[in-house]
Each structure stands twice: as structure tokens, then as C-alpha cells.
Length: 193
Image (cartoon, rainbow, N blue to C red; front, top):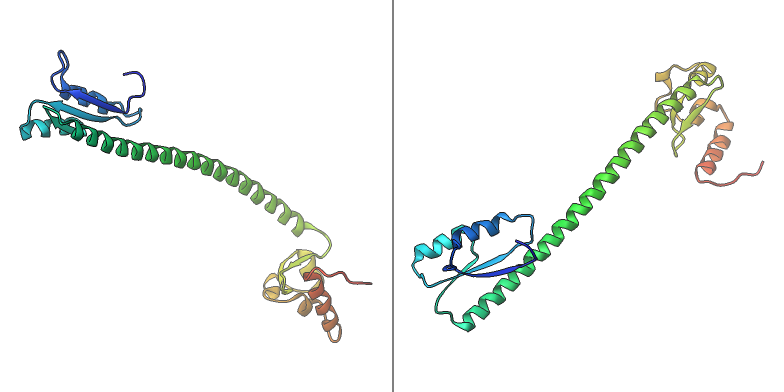
């Protein structure tokens, strides 16, 4: 019950120990690394093998033992234990990553709530500004405008949908000049006065 034993070779006929019960006890230790259990017995009936394997034994060897067979079974147990250890490590890595993902998701949720609140506050301020204001996308299409903008130019909210800044603000020959200026601004170019 103490220590980190990964391979247990147990004789069925240990005085004072029920080998089948021992198999059950080993399998109940789920919080510990896997223990590979080989049960040795002079019993060779298939019912005994089935009983041992059903109780949790991984392997069953009949006595008298062939040393080469025992060595081969221990080598197989070592391969299986190595796979168990790797799976346990991968599971632990996944659980650690899951914890990190959950922490980042919580950070994103908090940031999203903050951004949503900030956006609502900005929108309220933007709409309440007494001076005409608007925003546009990279193609110069109006995205948002405040009440003062619509009032100054005589547009209702539905009148400005899909309109460009040039369409709304410019007439005649100034359309080309303003269009070029907006294109330069969107490209991040500096313009001389």
C-alpha cells in the first residue's frame, strides 16, 4: 500500500492472503499509477484463469514456471506500463492545458464584458455630442453617425445606410478631391496642407 510499485508478481497460494481479493484491492487504487499484476498458480484450469483475470490480474502463469516465459511476460508488462505512464503524462498535460484554456476563456469573458460596457458608453457619448460626427469604413461608407450629423445635413437614420462620405458631404467638383483625400487617409498617407 505504500511506495510506487508498478509490477506485482503474486503467488495464488500466499498464506493468509486471498489472491483474488488482492487483485480487487490493487484495482481499487485508482489514484495511483497503474500496477501490472501477474498471478502465479499451480492451478491450471480455465475457470481459475478466468477468475484471476476477471478479478483484475493482467496475466496468469502456471507453475512450475519457465524462466524464459516469465522474463518475456515481464518484458511485455514493462512495455504496457511504459504506455500507461505515457498516457498518464499526456492526460496530465491535457488537464493542465484545459486549466490554462479555462483561465484564458475567463480572461476573455471579463475583457469582453469590459469592451461591451465601454462600447455602450462610447456610443452614448458619440450620439449625444452636439457637433456632427461620423465614422466610416476603409471604402468611405458611413458606419455610424450621430444625431447632430443627420440634423445638420437633413438626413434621417435610414437615409444614410450604404452611403459614402463623399456622396453625403460633397457636391460637384469637390467630390473627386475629397474622394482622393479620404483614400489617402485610409492608406495612412500624410497630406500636405
